[in-house]
Length: 319
Ligand code: XMP
View 1 (cartoon, rainbow, N blue to C red):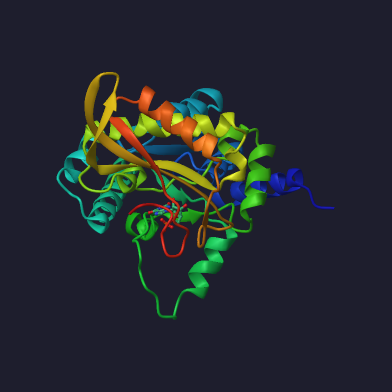
View 2: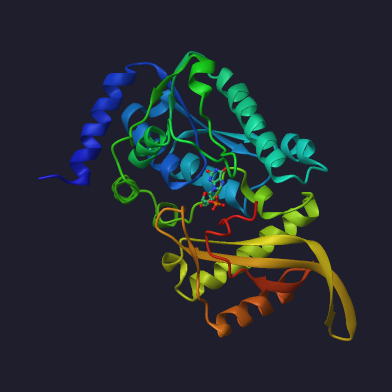
């Protein structure tokens, strides 16, 4: 009978057979798929694996430290922390068009990944956390007419360009199986059950021009919101939740003073696969308490709204 423990041993043996003594590189995002892929690869080939964590300056509060700390210090993987915040934020300066933002980030991500990968002498393999539904999707979508709503951020086409062979040890698994495997490999639940986070990061939760000031406010507000969701025991009921900072300041009153600060929108949805989604029906009490906390604890925000759009017609992200 089939268990995740047996799958793990079989997968490790397959990776060793495919990779031999060669070196492997992997783009680590901190998401479930790349995290489980990295942990499995590391078990199979140890220090032949080097992970590159690209810090584009669009990550959540403490995210880089948490991901790098956990894989490098706790699990002993070789992890390069590519600190490229200046590069990304510099190129995004003054850009407000959503597709332009996505294209800039996608292009820079590939450049940066390639730059760090080139420093790893003799790398022959690129590991990716491709899942079975990704394999199916790319097949069933080919040929049919398609409308691009948002250009997606990934490393497609990179292996050929860099002359690397692919290792995809999760290709036969569904998401729930990947989570079980991650558990089996000793990854903490906080990584295994994380909400999805988009490759372009906070850039697409900051409509209009991206500034360091807005990003800082957004990070703090998002951290308070997620803390509220966890405290109320709602995190695992929600498919994805985040704050978007709006490109507008509004008037408020606090103490005896007038304020003129940013407005933000809270987003939370339930979904099965991200293709369709319903907004989450928070209680009035939860919404009121969360708004009060954000306004009291986050300097720069004086108005909180709740996004009650489902998908379709809305998308989950704001851009
Ligand atoms: P939308 O906004 O299109 O998002 O309803 C559906 C799901 O996809 C995530 N998303 C992305 N994930 N790269 C990613 O890896 C991207 O460029 C990207 N854009 C959106 C989004 O967070 C949601 O879970």
